[in-house]
Length: 193
Ligand SMILES: [Zn+2]
Image 1 (tube, rainbow, N blue to C red):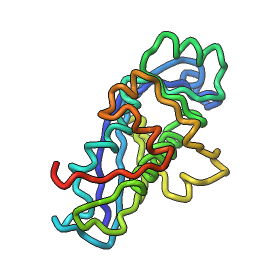
Image 2 (cartoon, rainbow, N blue to C red):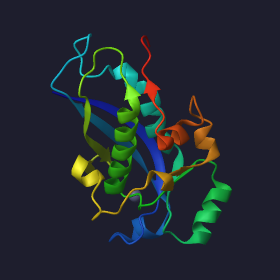
Image 3 (cartoon, rainbow, N blue to C red):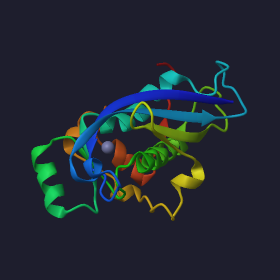
Image 4 (cartoon, rainbow, N blue to C red):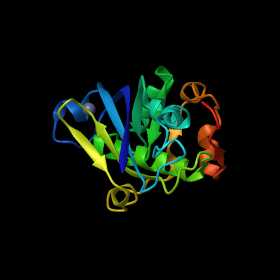
């Protein structure tokens, strides 16, 4: 059984090195749609794979970190990175370029890590991230599976190299959320939401 939760955010970026001159040389934005797909062969006490309501907490916080933010690639020109960070409060710096493909890998890894650290309390069993789909436009998307997320061919994604600005972190219910995930702290799902 596969279930899917849709999130949406607005994000700005430049994708260096791509074929489209507009995309590689000018800051521009997209209205992203992100689908998180989860799979399990079991159902919980509510006869669900994983209650959608539970996804509106830390998972939602992580995905919405990108909303009204600029996505920066750490390999970009240092003066560009410095200027964007100076003039735009919400930014996320990634160790890979913010193409739809890399966005889907980054979000897969973030959600996969969070899910692995989360203890469930309602009988959920063997729930895994099936894939993450990132729609950059209405007509184009990338879908990341486990083998893509952890593929060295596509660039290693080190959690320590995903940086969120203070403005982004302050928007989370717990501004230490990412630090806790990186340290491998455990999260416990609430009994009621
Ligand atoms: Zn673009």
